[in-house]
Length: 278
Ligand code: NDP
Image (cartoon, rainbow, N blue to C red):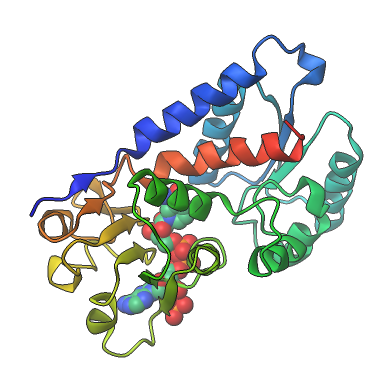
């Protein structure tokens, strides 16, 4: 068996085209606005922020980038967020993580009002996600669900195995799969007999951050395999799944790059439209 490759790049591009079409013809003042706050000069974060800005502008979303120096104090950052919370032009706010040492990330994330929380990380929105009333969902798992749905596989009753329990990927992905009636198992670094657990998965979501960790022998024949990992190995990008061996076992698989990655920004744009009521 050779799996079908899920083309995240194409699906994300289609979503972005659809949003662009919905926003076309609107005067600038009636467009959704996304504010992205970047503190410090982490090079990876700077790249992500530029990508988000570009994606907003291409889609017809007003982009407000706030770049602050590394030594910005917490109170100053809180004051900035307070202003964005009040701004009528801004419908979504995102603070690029990680924040420099000395800033309390939880405090900052909680300072964004839940109604403008474009990342879905505010504790109120996390609670809403787990209680099935969510308005915004964290972007990467939202993208994962769109990719799974693109396969046409009926999720109800399937075994889903999520590897990784971070607040930004593993846990919200588990909540979303549970909401879709999967039987969900979440693995992490203390899981015993992890390969055996993964072998149960009709759906496998790998969000670990270790190159080629999930090998083909752990994949149930016919599974849907979603590889969230972005790792640099031997000078190239590889996922958490050993692609070649998993390709021979799965029915559907995402590549790295070109799978989950492009969906994350597309989901952010979708959240922004949702928060703006578009
Ligand atoms: P974290 O480092 O926050 O979490 C990693 C998780 O993997 C933890 O729950 C950890 O377990 C678990 N883990 C680590 N080692 C093992 C192991 N040996 N066996 C089993 N479980 C293990 O990572 P993130 O969730 O933020 O990201 C995961 C990957 O996804 C990274 O490669 C990241 O770059 C990528 N990513 C990609 C995105 C995209 O847009 N495509 C967006 C976000 C992330 P424990 O909790 O016990 O420590």
